[in-house]
Length: 397
Image (cartoon, rainbow, N blue to C red; front, side):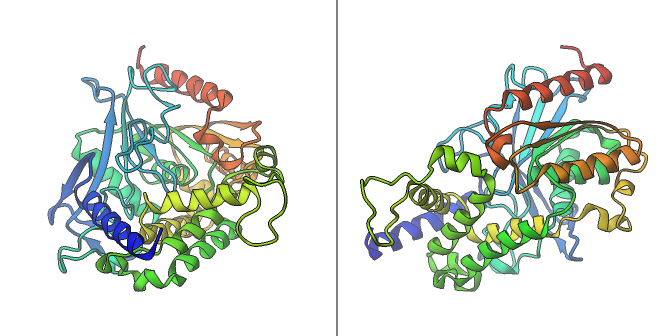
């Protein structure tokens, strides 16, 4: 693609993302000065909005509501077609009629997180004071801020409490925050492939990604949308680096090994001889067309800042003191981004707090991304946990 075509494509993409950031294709709840959002950074956000989708029907007692929380680059389209990519929802294997989170039984809510780029207030949204995109003028967001925004939406929908909050990775962090901050409003919680704090290794990988974005000349100090460009190369590299952590060594070897891409011999150059190189480049380039670079900075930073024990004197069990929420914690054997030891820390803290908790380490060669894929054991465990919790809640089939 020549430079002129790239510039035109970037300008069109920037315009489309700006429209999605302010007027998403999904439902959206807008909050004015009467419902300000106080952030961990000490700043109050007003006005603000949150984009969401719902699946299934809320029962008369409003007791069958489920909140599913997305990971770093997810969105509100958990079980419906993404309007930007045309691809199925990120958790369509889990959410839907007859699936583990059965929309014939439950009213499922999926939001775009605060700081995101699909309709919830984020850096690509319009700053009402300037009429331009917030960019880096948006205050830094935390996981707790994301959950406060979700809680305001649940209040807006008139739902007193949630039957279940579930999610993996950053979604699992939101689940833990919900159970800690709003425990009396969460009957059951399923944090999957997650941790109570981001590890130094994960912070390091995301810092590499952020620096790649900010080193791109087209980042323009975060004002690229105003110039009709985007830091394509930097964001693509960030995605490539992060995507490696989502897979496992086993899956990389099985899927690619050292196989060459469209050639029989080494090219003795840097055009990408190997299939794994081509795969990562594709992941990077396709990501640029669906995600905002500044949102990547904000949401990855929120994960870095997450440390649930820190607000409780460094003792994680105190975050769940007196909880009545029942938990199902799951991890995967080849997940090196959020290894099983992170889940065991959560389980031990919950047990120390006297919580009802079950735990499963699932055998899988797919690494961290396993929670998004067809993993029958995970689905069976989640289904069993939900069925038992539903009986305890008095929700009949």
